[in-house]
Image 1 (tube, helix red, strand yellow):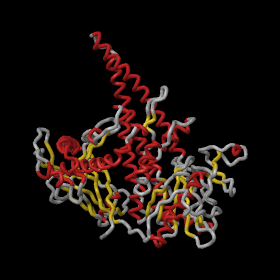
Image 2 (cartoon, helix red, strand yellow):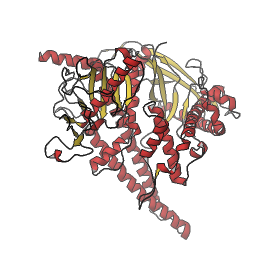
Image 3 (cartoon, one colour):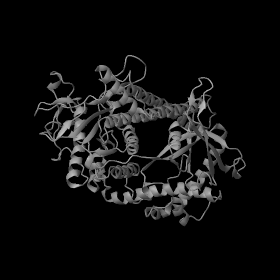
Image 4 (cartoon, one colour):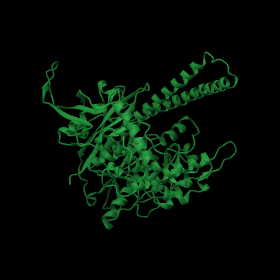
Amino acid sequence: MAKTQTLAFPVRLPDAMQAGALRLLDASRDAINTIVTLLWPTLDAFAGERTGPAWKQVEQYLIQRSGHGNRQERCEMESAGRILRAQATRKQIFQTILPILTEGLICPAEGKRPALKDYRAIQAAVRDLRDDMEEAESFLLMTNVVEQACNTFLESGKFPTTYEHLQPVPVQQVAQLTFAGDDGMAAGQTYRIQPEYRGPRCDLHTHEQLPEELCWRVRLRGPEEQGVWGWWLAWHEIALPEAVQRYLLAGAKPLAPTLREGTSDDGSRFAMLDVVVEAPAHLVPPLEQERRALGFDWGIRSLITVSILEKSEGKEPYRQVSRPVFLDTGGIDGRQARLRREIDRLKGRRDRYRKLVVAAQKTLYEQQIPVPSHYAGWQARVADMERHIQTCWKTYGRRNRELAHLASNLLILLALLSDCRLICGENLRTLKARGRGRDVRGRFRNWRNNTTVRGELWRVLKYKCYLLGIRTRQEHAQHTSHTCPHCHQPAKTYRSPSSADRQEAVKGGAWLWCDACGWNGSRDYAASLNIARFGLAFLLTYHQTQRYVAYRMTSVEVNPCSYTGRGAMLLLPSQGLTARPLTGTKICYAGWSSSIALRTSQPRSILALLSTAAIRKRVYDSA
């Protein structure tokens, strides 16, 4: 059976389809929420076998129908069934963690500080039930359910005893409808899609030959303004993204799309169609053939730091085969920090006007006086602040996704150039940076570490590596930045390598110095080496025992590595001393200004080929 990966690409529907698509989403959301509410008491029935479609499982227990048509009802039941299956999984996890829900997971109130969740106690309790390195996703989900139970305790003063007490009925707030319950693009009874191919053509202005193009003609069935359901008379053409066209023209299989609701920056709603494609993926080479591991660390001064090690037959078991690579995103971090301060400022203004509105409402109710002229202005300003805050958060999310694509592209590029098929990184999603820091930089660093950029990077990196036949592993992060990679002994960190700053060790210092062997270097560089050592220890153990084993810094199987970098090839141009090239205004990877610009989420199918050609050209010119 061929190896495939499911990819989804959002496409905004044409303006002529927006009104009808939003009516369809509203009607479907009401039907889906009704199904979830009716079947919520029978949630345990969705925790069993899940091999078939979700709508078949829902159909066994559902009595009330929406009356929207057979296939439309199937699509609504499919969407509701997926929600119920996910909640049934969380309920099983809740039954597992119920014995550990005690007041020991809560830090009691002290002075003006209210009661808080004790994250260390939560992680320790969950780790006793299941090691986080056995199933990282399951460990994270279990931790999330425990924190949700602790939130219930902080609100009501007692832990929930049933899952229904913990979780209210999960109705849809944002409308989303999958067409997986229909009969396909050609014979569907809720949607129809006709591919339209446009062969090679000539541009009228440049007379350049353009490649073959593919677009879709779409027709939907939904309610009219009077509430009557029926097919739309007109077919509407939607332009497909370049990546979707490339996959479909190469023979990839299109799957049932998903219609969902989005929100513009001004607060208006719009409908989009998630085009789902089953793309072919490369097979992963056998682990017996692997000899190299790439390790990356989330840095303090840079976003990620990358090092590559390989198995050595000499005195030192691990040998470094690449120079360390630092991905510096200082310009983006600065803009994100300013955006965070703007969000805080807007929240403060919104809260002030909201207090004025509440006080005015209370006065109007008690004293029965006329509404003041500035009351409507306060309400308008509260709504305006809310819109601005939502716009800022959307901008922040887009930048996070750009960073995730940038970092994942760089990691894959370095792995392919080094002939490495194993990428190891920190499992930092189960850790939480606590406190606000001593200064503005510390506050922003803790805030960035707690945001979704790390989880977004892992999500993007995993599916891209799956497509390219590269393995990914999440390693335990504890003590990786405070252990010498050469002698495997605990080491201290300092503010800088200067003798003046090495008078006093700093817990979060940027420079690591080992008193046992004298090795010193960037703390992030040492952590990337240690994570790569985890990967090599995993490979060697598998070669000998055919077992999957996760290691920590205290494991004796983790061997030291060469710190001199003997034999390491300079696979990339020199990074230089500046993080930004002299020409241009874009944030670029230093040293690449005249060869290639590293793109993020933009489709660039020949990124690796271009970079390899640029490197060869530089080597040839220098020779």
